[in-house]
Amino acid sequence: MTADVTIPSYGVRNRVERTGPAIRAALDPEQRAEFEADFHAAAVETDDTLDLAPLHRVIDRWWPQAVLCANPEIQAGIDADRRRIAAGDPTVIGEVWYPPGHPQAPHVA
Image (tube, rainbow, N blue to C red):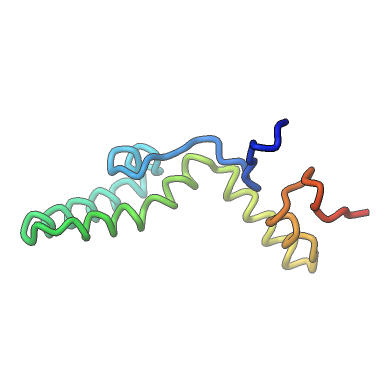
């Protein structure tokens, strides 16, 4: 591995564009209907006011959830870290900043 390669701590594999169609496609079916309702309401407001801010807010709100849906391993990693923190494992914080294998990652015996 070269020094210019960055590996996110939870390994995002599937990128999601910050567009309505990409977010819609990435969401779980039960979330999709709520996203569509939010998006359509924002589109009506945008049409009335000629201001794109309502649509940007919907994209900003739903994009992180779409990324989690497209990359379930991220949520699994977050859940595992939460369990370790709850169990009192202080090395979790170091691993977030320095993923396993990084020269500065904490070493656990």
